[in-house]
Length: 353
Image (cartoon, rainbow, N blue to C red; front, top):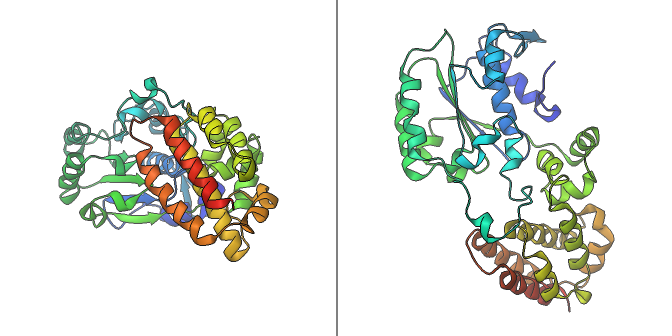
């Protein structure tokens, strides 16, 4: 009856169990890990709120998908719905946007041309354009809905402009903010929102869903995507799938790893993704040594167990902290090969005695 993911059914029922779909305030903040379906959930919620004849199944509402309002929404033409995305995502409204902007799922080469790209920020001009929509009468009775995704990408001026609208919103205007990183939003914005933590599926649920989607090697993709199923599905179709497998195979045997050669082979790919793979790998090494558990690379259990027996846990933790700094640097223009060489040489020193 709905396209709500199985791990979202409970939170959907809680939000829509009242027939009038009333909320405690005029702004919702959907927060949670990237790649678990928050954006799709927000769009389904907006569509249901705008639906002229929502269906009622077990005291839970869903958009009917047949009324004129649903038709407008599906064709991105609903007069009472306004969506704000960064320029880099604006052409992906009907795709799985939550994975399109994921650095781990992008699969984009790390070359000079890729540095020159459309804006990743939400600008103040985009927020200012809301004024007419927010304060003019709606096309029909009911909600006027503004969806902002990802809301942490608003620059400072845009965030302040939105705050003014949140302070004194007209009746029947609902803001839906979707964020991967709520800590990056202004505290004053957070305080004006009803915050909803979006559930992430467990590994078994994610694996079942990925198999239903005929995903390419679900276990490998789920590891690379940080256990986020939508990002994993996209990753299996990306240019990073094969390089990721080659990378993991090489770092799993640091005694045979040639940092220079691997850096040369990987320099064309997204640096942030590569560092993320290393971060997850080091997390699993420390986790296995301290608790006997592997969170991400479960399919590499034999290699992790063998390597964890050699690793000094404090040295590995220190290296992981250094990776956090390198992750921040990876988004700036630099010599990719030298950048990776330094990281990989340090990796061998950290984990191989």
